[in-house]
Image 1 (cartoon, rainbow, N blue to C red):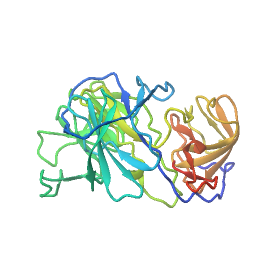
Image 2 (image 1 turned 60 degrees about the vertical axis):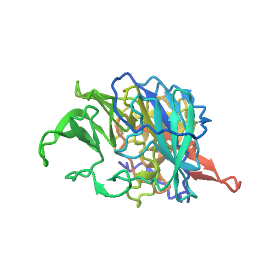
Image 3 (image 1 turned 90 degrees about the vertical axis):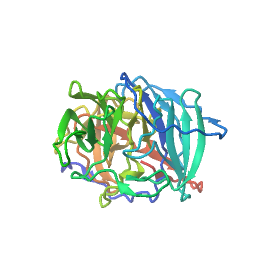
Image 4 (image 1 turned 180 degrees about the vertical axis):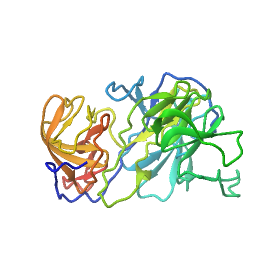
Length: 350
């Protein structure tokens, strides 16, 4: 949505994009239990010193634990349809891969003791393939008729599909079978939360299959502002939320500072002719600056209590975002890190 009054600024994009990422757990009002591999490790653990905080403006949750915060590495709470929790919700498995390394480290985090252990190192890249325990017999999990990431519902009743309405195929119907719509909310990457079969999470949504509705439990705000000519490169910033087996937590990844980074949300759809962004609050933002909405960087020259005005869109050659009510608004400069060479410049990690 690019109104005629809003002009695109031909600014050259930063050349490199380090990720400042962290794995957090959002504690939720849900229940259940799911099986996940529990790794035993004789490696001495190191205190993770998680950072616990609460941002009531960002979703309905009971708080966030930031488990990791290393801008030099990419973390995954496992990837896509791979579970990351132990069956009792105590242990969290995640991988860490630095930019200058070809292999990843695997960590096991103890949420009770706040201790992380490195338990393995190797080629643990993102994969949707299945193997036997000895690494042989490579195969796909299921044949796909829809382009989607998949996961089983907590009680095994449905094989879920992502990137759309919460839906899935019943376990006892011959394939190819009917696709059942299970809730009226949309999700990205999908995961069960608990073993009751009631709750499903995906990106920022927690779906309640009993009522068919859902709510925004937290927006990970994880995004990269690519130039307009770049396609889907979401692998390097996917939040990949995973509900815990006991149904009390969701692990996800973000490359935005959820504790200190300014955030607001559009208060209404912005028409094509609009020259202002109405938001819930501008309190955390500077008087003028650069915003991020979707993949677009938008400049503003002034603000009121509930609006950003004097817009200049498509900064850094980014694509125009659909400016719809509820869309997250963050600060571009809060997504920047100093150059490692000490030159004083900044490079984007949004």
